[in-house]
Length: 236
Ligand SMILES: N[C@@H](CCC(=O)N[C@@H](CS)C(=O)NCC(=O)O)C(=O)O
Image (cartoon, rainbow, N blue to C red; front, side, top):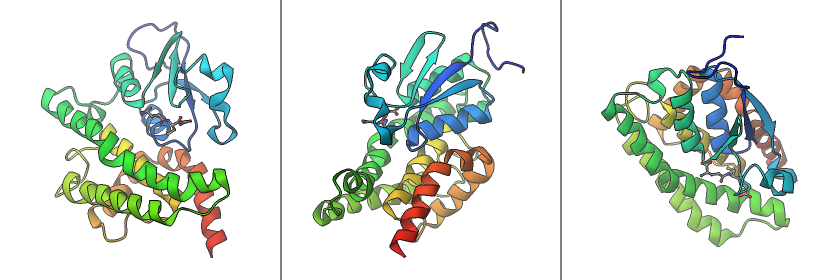
């Protein structure tokens, strides 16, 4: 198999520690598959608390996924990992353009999304899905209300500002910003919330991202889609 690596050809494929229940793990997995970056997946099942094992603590100081181990070089934080991969491997320019201004535009979204989108979607999903699953208690209605408002506002900004009059988050071409955004939006399935209703730009964009990145997009979303389907039948 031809190795996609700019430098050493003798290096072993890097290890990607992941759980596809995690948004940043899915974004990286799709990106790596599309760009034919060879890797060995190592599943860390968050649901089984595998990230709390002593063995995994040696891999990640923070006990979070994703993490990569590239021949002894360990790196956490999906955005840092993404930028490292762009420097180490051949990646199609559109994902992180070399042009200074185009790259800065991708960076602008990557900086915004932590608190602009991820925080609010994540907290809502915790209130609706993860916490009730862990405690066995129903979602706290006050907390849900407070978090729902912020989550909706974040989605409205994605729909009405980032996606205003353009097909992708940063312009006319897909970039890593779209994968980071789409995987966050998909996580809302766990909370039974449909982000596409009343958000036409977002609805069209997510279909576009899927089409551009399939079959990898759907493969990475298999686990979350299965859980969402189970939750929907339980509700019906
Ligand atoms: N900012 C980090 C976020 C990493 C993160 O929060 N990972 C979550 C899954 S999405 C995790 O491993 N959580 C386990 C825990 O917090 O116990 C990144 O982008 O890589």
